[in-house]
Length: 381
Ligand code: ADP
Ligand code: MG
Picture 1 (cartoon, rainbow, N blue to C red):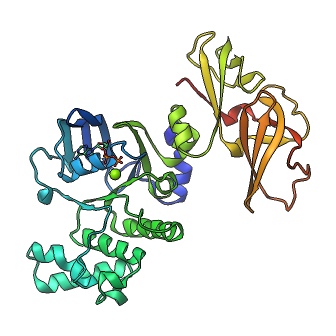
Picture 2 (picture 1 turned 90 degrees about the horizontal axis):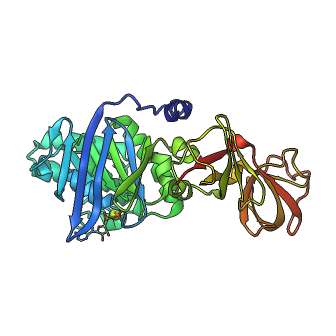
Picture 3 (picture 1 turned 120 degrees about the vertical axis):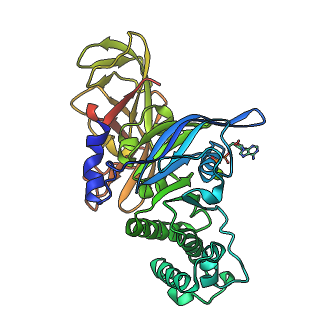
């Protein structure tokens, strides 16, 4: 299900890496800090040439996992394999990966070109080759005109690109980036995300990007792994994560969502009916589920998949009446908050395709919210 749903989007963007061979294999890796479990029995394969985003809240173990890949931390248990080679006991400098740190840590007294060249000098690369590789890298990150400047004479975005060039000039097979764009303001961050995609596309280097920003993960990632408390909760393409969240945590973490709760009152092969719901009406699930009568289930519905109407919809299931409490007009979209008669608040987003919605619904109006059954995702946890 996930693969077929993801294919059109990935193919359209020209970024279908589904067939990349596994390049990094993490098997049953655990890391504790004086008894505190930072990464818990984690298993993951990252494919060659993909951008894999590790997404999670602060303290969920993202940096610790990345540092274990780079060799700065040693797993207590489990195994890390990179490019077919067991990394146990392999020091950071001998690994086919490079890490770009959260703080860029550029040398302030060196020019941009010297900063980028530094690692190559360390490795004893001959002068002529160094010059050529630095020049090519500066061109790639669009910093050629700034080659002689010092880091202090650059903007935040430019400094970020110097750090990127410095990490990439050594031609790592995989680049590990820990919150690479967190120092940039929102607009620059968005621009830089596209530059990063462009650069990665040109080089084909495997990128693992740590971020706590779900929009960033959706923009950058071929696949996203969502972490919580040291565990990977779901690994999927951005679209699948959004459309088919595995549980309530993922549904709420990725994007905005309405979650309704109810108890199974009808359990058939082709549908399930929930009663006693916080919607205040029956909820119809249009497919069978492995569940028991009386069991609590949840249904997640994205705001843009909810309908808002002045009149009662034809189907009384998945529909309830309330009052429009709040409207945020954002130009292309309008967000509504509707307080249902039962007390629950529901978010509805409408695309402003016309200048005005014909129904003229506004603040304090009574209205109906509803959703077609296929718009909901049934969740058992
Ligand atoms: P994230 O990058 O997702 O914010 P981290 O991987 O940095 O999370 O940290 C995960 C957990 O491990 C946090 O609770 C953090 O305090 C703890 N931790 C990380 N590194 C150390 C360390 N060197 N010593 C003790 N605790 C650590
Ligand atoms: Mg971190």
